Length: 138
Image (tube, rainbow, N blue to C red):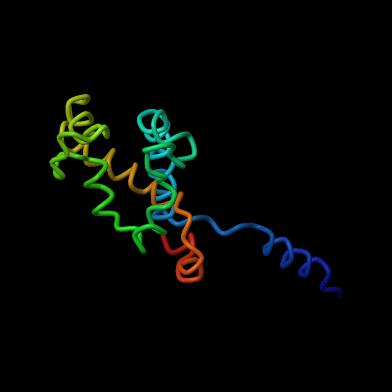
C-alpha cells in the first residue's frame, strides 16, 4: 500500500489559499469603495494616484509627513466641517455627502470612513517607519 494519494492530497491542500475572514472582506470592500469615492471626488485635484501637484498635498505621504497615520485626524480633514476652513480650496466632503443622500449624516460618516480607509491603504511610509508597520497591520 502506497501513501502517494495521501501525499498528493496533502500537497494540494497546501496550494489552496485560506479564505479571508469576514473582517478582512469588510476591510477590503471598504478600501475598494473608498478608492471609487477617491477617484470620483478627489483625483481631479490630488491626481489618480494621490500624489498631489503644485500646491496640492501628496496623500500617499501623510504617514511619512506626520510620523503616523491618524485616521481620526484624516477623517476630520476629509469631512471638513469640524476644521472650520473657510478659505480652503478643499471641499467639505462631509457636508456634500450629507446633502446628497437621504440618509444624511449616517451616509456621510460611512463615505468619509471609506475614503479614510483607502488613504490609509495607499500610504508610503518613510524609510524610518517602513519596518515598523506592514500592510497586514492596517
